[in-house]
Image (tube, rainbow, N blue to C red; front, side, top):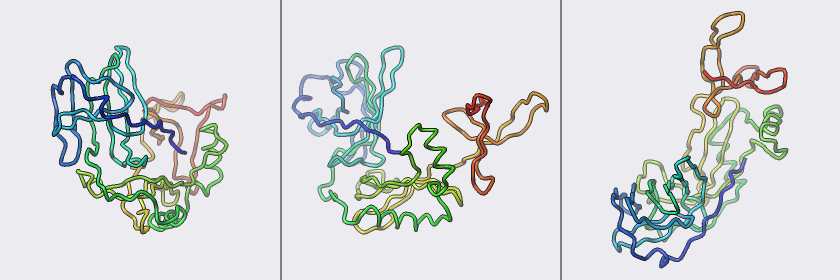
Length: 277
């Protein structure tokens, strides 16, 4: 399923050049990156819907261009806004910033954000999405995939209440740099695919160079699908069970049996049973 983002437009840099105090605490980023952490004890910049970047060389505030991923609010009025950096309106993988605000003022920011964007980055793909997907599937090399299983596809449609939902991967263009490159210097335009294999079971983001089709890297999403636990039964005492980790709790759903299909448990109201283990 595609994640919906809110595009945050850039604001003219001059709107941030006025008499705010400098950050009360600042942990500088590595060469070419914005500060890893920045805090304002008072008179922080006004929050205008985007991260505010502090250029340590010019001592000026400049706007950050990114996509808003979401916001969390608490009862004390603090808000945490999360952004993903974009270049040429294309997301930068691993380029994230959390902005803490209260009363319309920025209290602090933390994350990884490129301040000096390389000039030579590609702006458009040279290969098609279908060719990139073929290369990604060849890299994974699974015997079967989730979208080939009608029961799993039907389950996803019911779970998401979306008749168009599918596990079939769709490519998203991103700027990718190997996670070990802590300066995000070697940015490459890449297709990003969410590949959900069923046999053998795996799920990973696969990044394919949009210029030549080379596999640039992979990021595992599934590390351990089934979680062991102990359930207190009504008639048989405590029993060991296998459940599925889900939204901070567990549900009675086990994968890996019946040729890879899922075993699910419902109550008489046809509601999936969620456990607190």
